[in-house]
Amino acid sequence: MPDPITRVRIAPSPTGPLHIGTARTALFNYLHARHVGGTFILRLEDTDVTRSTLEFEKDILDGLHWLGLAWDEGPEVAGEPARGPHAPYRQMERLPTYAAAAQRLLADGLAYPCYCTPEELDADRKAQEAARQPPRYVGRCAKLTPEERLAREAEGRRGALRFRVGEGLVAFDDIVRGHVEFDVSNLGGDFVIVRADGNPLYHFTVVVDDAAMEVTDVIRGEDHLSNTPKHILLFRALGYDVPRFAHLPLILNPDRTKMSKRKSQTAIDAYINEGFIPEALVNYLALLGWSTGTEEEVLSLDEIVERFDIGEVHKGGAVFDRERLEWLNGQWIRRLSADDLIDRLRPFIGKELDAGLIEQMPSDEELRALLPVIQERLPTLGAIGDLAGFLWVADVDPDPAVLVPKRWDAPTTIEGLGAARATIATVGDVVFEADELEPPLRALAEARGWKAGDLFMAIRVAVTGRTATPPLFDTLVALGRDRTLARLDRAIAVLAGS
Ligand code: GLU
Image: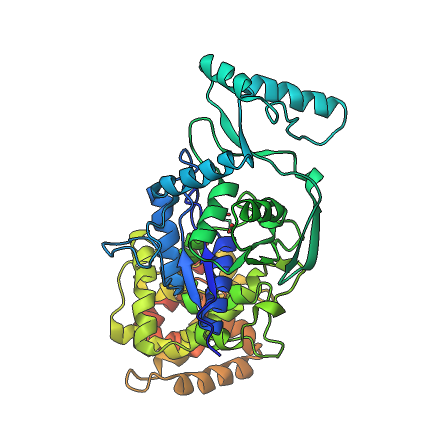
């Protein structure tokens, strides 16, 4: 049943590039909205003015677009007007809304101006540390009389606005984590919602906006769980309905520490630059904290939308497994049509060219002929250089130490490559095909008492400079007869001269 009432949001702060955790949170919000037929909102939380930049904002929006996570309501981007009834969608353009809400809390006595100086607060913190108490606001300004406030204002002090947290328990039923309770006395005391300079802070703006945008389900990372009681108190104080909450499990490194940008590759950009494709990344991100419950793992965004149930998200941390991501990426690369794959490979081949790792750009025809042997061997688009770059250089320079197979010595290798050259030379240009090349080369190895694997490895290194390549005979065909023979000659010369 479509549920037009459900409204969810992703609310990134443009203080860094799109992070894998934010992308996963955006995806789960998108999946829930699409699954139930609700609305997916994008809001930019840019109130940290010193750390927010337009470059980061662009990186985040571009990254979400690239992943295919289109929002129904959100800010103006790329010349498009803002979409949705609650514009603007950047918090710094919504300051009057927060000011009005702050006035209400002040008028109701639910918030109060705090004139404590940084030095006073610092001294409080140190005394608490010395007494081994957790840090909390001591409440110095909580009970000032109107006269005392006026006196401080007269001294030129500007008050920050603190929210009164009160006492008791805050409880809620988290969609992922079940029943959760917090004792208000552990929240660190009354907290600042608007700074003395008038800048509203995250806990406050997030609540005012979630209410204004009629968000029904707040789906976000577990790192926000401890913020939720503060938010619930604010929703109640402002007389708003409290939304449902779903806190998604943290994304962990294989050693089960939290995945952070200092220790791990967390920027989506870095994955894009390596040649992960969006089909695979959204598929992988969906499996970070959710599973199909079946063996099926390779699913399109639409297939995931159909199956996704926010109530089935796991509680435990989700370990980021790079190998599985690469495997999935390979699976998705295999599913691309030839034209599509060629289009997507071009920029990566271009990068090889720019870096001087190859000397010429292959034509579409050349690439198309190669796809049957490389398509299922590409874990990423960026692996194209390693896999096939030897085709787009004039010569390779095989390392003599690598040219000689383990069970062989240099004279045997020279002899083997010479014999292979003579055998390959008997295969004419027109019939230069894998099934014309393989039988005579196998027969050669057998006649000489060589292990075919040794002979083939020596040929492979001679013509590609590498030990891992597409299948040998396909590789020779892709190189063509003349280049194959020339590279064999060169390798023999290299060995003879070493
Ligand atoms: N701006 C917050 C963040 O980027 C949003 C948290 C939330 O979803 O409430 O972490």
